[in-house]
Image (cartoon, rainbow, N blue to C red; front, side):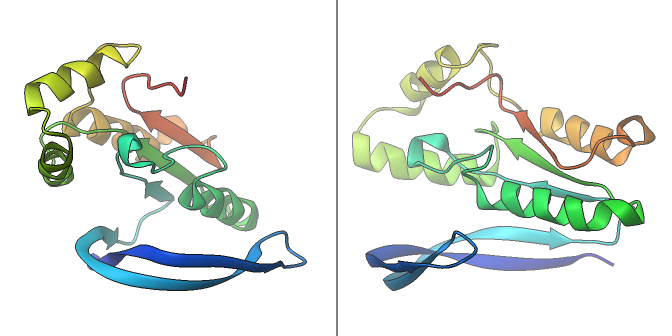
Length: 168
């Protein structure tokens, strides 16, 4: 039985680092404002765990690697779960065409920049190594691979499904 939860978004109005903890993380004091956006988190029983990270790089969301907290959580969970035969991998899509998040973010960017969707879409395509944005089908195919026996030797990995984005 699947459970869907919402993880509400917030904007940090003030953020102060008050010290460093022994584990390397920092103690923070923050003033936040909630906003009308949220991530959907879907939990279901499965033989392995995959974490999908969705976001827009243009909004400063790190989608892959150690800067991403979901990625770091997947690696830590993989280290703990591996001895029990449980695999943990992260699926990190970039901008996925036609998704609700893509449309919502597009509307916000257009309001802020005044640049129309076709011009932004073309610029996004040109920035990718494959010159095409992933579709929901591309992401689903990668998720199916992660859930299949073909990936049974993989754990603690983050697969970027983003058309070959690069940080210049």
